[in-house]
Length: 253
Image (cartoon, helix red, strand yellow):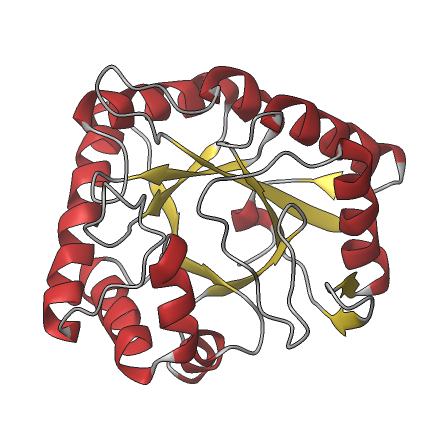
């Protein structure tokens, strides 16, 4: 059994600090770095990439909607062609710093509200795929299995990884519940849910039922108040249970 642990990071802005990226990323294998639209700034982005390089972590772009005030978690309607341009712009931003640090971009994971919009709306899913195709078709797109975005990636020959959230709730329909402000989770609960997803292919919902999932990568949110404890417990617990924690590129080839 192999799994990637991806972390959302690089979300501080100027003098405003969010998360403890240096400590959290010690336990990750992939990082999704904010690219300036929903969070982050050029200095934060560069620092995040330097931390990833220090710990040998694969770097991915975490592009979002232009929503600094709402942290990209508000649904904002945007013309799909404008969105495509916004995404290419953000990919170029992160790739510039990667070039300076002699690293390569591994994946793209839409952020927050855009993540959900791309999974459920044909036009937004196409905008994400078209932006990746135009910029670098070798990049991996991270989404949930069997969503509209997942199916379109498969149909169009785009590398795609299936993601499971173990520090977010799933509603009765099996959709993730986006938190406006990230709440703390019991690290042992997160580990239990992760093991259930990896070993049994299921995860619990708010109504006490279970849905089927397929995990190539597990997401941990770096802005949670106890994110360091959560990801440390998760990684060590997975390894104790015989799950090999590796970069996403070693799973999606």
